[in-house]
Image 1 (cartoon, rainbow, N blue to C red):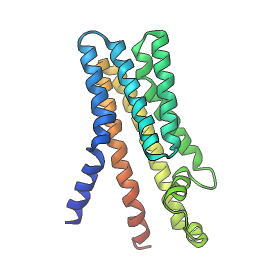
Image 2: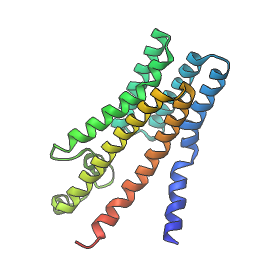
Image 3: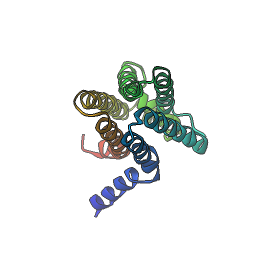
Image 4: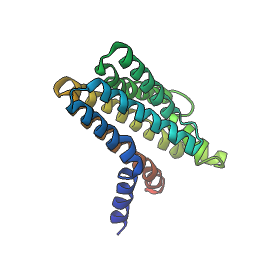
Length: 204
């Protein structure tokens, strides 16, 4: 019963209105324009849509998300570069740069006193955690494991996109890359939520 509930929860996290807005609609926009040999216009419009979704979520939640800011900045740079160069490939490689940059940020934070996931969690969910809890080795290891895992995920997304860009058509690359990123990230969010509970309660 618990596994079924967790499975349903994961599906709810992935296949919701945000998924449709951030993944499905940009793909549809790109495909429609690409079908009529208007690839540049398709990339531009889907890029504008994606940036609009980031801004909408920011206005709705009133929260500053560092990773969303990085994603938005790189998307804007990619979009401007695409318009100036009139080359849709410029925008399509921006997610590769974004994922690489994010993975570097995660990995670098492992050498700091607090890893990036620990900083994010303590600012959002564990504001009132006691100092004893924060000094607990298992508490610290949890966030370092998750930070490393997120860095690995971002790096894997960059590598997968690079391979897709090299071997597949532009439309296939855009579709698979978009779906991969928008499915793997929510799954990892579910993993990030479930992992601490399991890790803290397992036998030492």
